[in-house]
Length: 315
Image 1 (cartoon, rainbow, N blue to C red):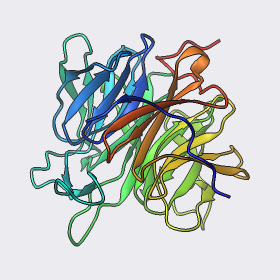
Image 2 (image 1 turned 60 degrees about the horizontal axis):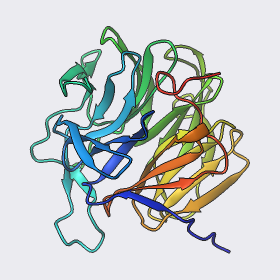
Image 3 (image 1 turned 90 degrees about the vertical axis):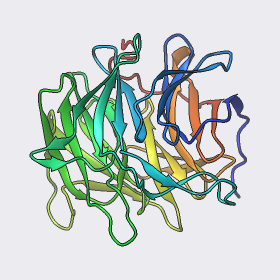
């Protein structure tokens, strides 16, 4: 029997494919609007403002150790035409594609600094999502771009927040999207969009993994792969270590236990559920982006979310 859609509180509508929500300490939610090219703030009363306009395709966002908002910018998408029956959704690389990059936004001034456009002379194609560790660095996925007859191979990178160093951690990986860290910081989780697979990478140091042998395609451990037609988007980790993955097509949040043995879905009222974050008292409120209908919603969560480095105080 399919679970019922839980009661939701709508916080904002009319957004242009929202993603990358960050529940801020003041009760507002920062997010990106990929199709509008903005970093957007939704206040507690629902007022929408635009702290910065990076352009291109701002895709994922996180607060860094210096208080700036770090953005994965995919360089821009083509979109379904207005009035398409499937709603607003990306359908390939933009004709005016401006190149993938990692940006940092000063929230006080709106100034946007480009930190990285390449790694070892290889350009970034479509940075998607990122997560900070407690050491001043962050992991980010590069899903790549899709064109009419070909698409890029994906990768996962580790970079310093001050723009001083970047390294490739995982390659190749097919359409890597959501990324997160376990509560102890020893495991990196990466969700693949087109396969609906969730991978775990054992960390031995900042930006270094212990590679599992063949048949692993890249050194990771497969936690779960969903049957049927699903697609994975971005993710968040809760305080118990469960990985909560926004799931496309049969829209919802797929909750996976740390060992991959338990999987259940929290359904949502649209197909293009792209991201989740935790905030509010004790981080027990989930904020979810429903992107094709342009909405940010919230709901009570069964347990607290995992505090994020540089955003939520840890005990």
